[in-house]
Length: 520
Image (cartoon, rainbow, N blue to C red; front, side, top):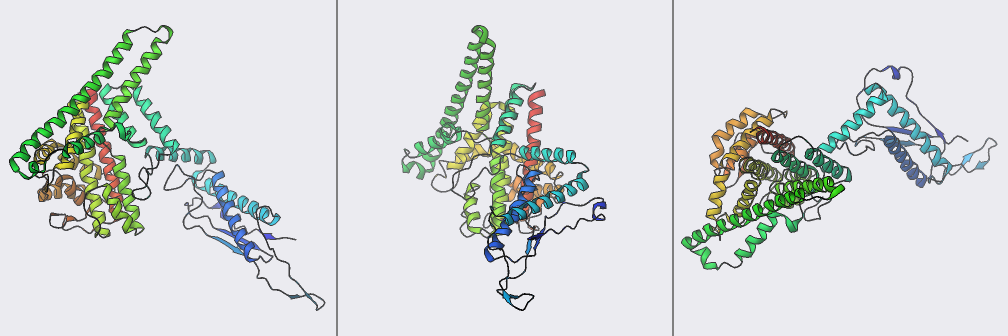
């Protein structure tokens, strides 16, 4: 008995269609025998699994993540049509008999096997026709598919922040890790100056690999050192303006001297070790051992530089904020904002959360990426390390309140060392906006020039005002500043646009820095 009729909508005229766009995979199954309630559910599940198997067999890739295989789209439809079950039906002689129906459709039943095989074959045939019409040949389709996967790899690790705030940070997928290691090795063997290769490798590390271990992370060590010292300073020092300012200067000088001299001693030790190995003879293994020591020394310098900046983590957190706002998960978005800034998010609504994200994204692009690169180009690895320590000091004590006078030297020093990087960041944002549709680069430049002084900080207003203008949104903090008054309230769409602009800005900054290091 035939349990299934396969419906094909593929006649000769449909095969002559020249070009079609990719769309949904809709499956229609019609049976000529009734199915019980459980059999309906099992048959539907088998059909969906068979469609997913067909997509996997042909390597159909997800449009959002080229590293993942697609299992259909969000608008796919699967329809199962079967006669209804009637308990009795009349036979030809006028008597009564029970109607036949399928009671179970588990994977080990013949009916389920027929359904799965038919749906798989029909979906595979439809995918092949689609591939032929869209790409011309299966080989061209596979090459494009691999290219899409490579582009997705180049985008870096996703996600590199917890799916929910305060959860453990997930590790990067293995393909991303291998891509990162391969890129770092590729940079090592490239014909570049050492400072240029170290910078390129550090940015590749930031994009693909995890942060350095917390136990040896210079920023974490500096934070712990600051906390230990503050716990031992008497309260009357903070309350007295003269004592607070004086001890604040000594504290800042001590921290900078301690970590910069420690970094210098560490780098000199690496160079000394490398020189010792080069002067020694190890027979047959001499070349291999020297190359291993050189690589280890170079990789350690890469890791040290990487610890002074972070772009990928910043951008990924912003993307996650956009996801929370799109799904109206306001509580999660409020918790997530704590990753970006110290503002109290408990009463913030969606537009205010989006504004806070954009403000932090633009300001931290300057503080967390452009400025370290700037000081690395000017003063080398110790310049980047010194900047990061000074910026950490400002973030810990450089604000009004208990540490106002004690932290004022750190705050003012941070203002001085960010004067040029903040304005360079605004210029980079304008240049990057020319590569992103829907942005207004010239408006960003105009708003930055006119409204950057509205912020209390002499530097933060430049990237924030520029972001406000080129995205056409209003960024404001009640009682503090309002940038881009003529703009609209920001939303998750603006965060995604800002993310792209920030990535392009970082790329331009990297290219310029490498050119300076290589040729100047």
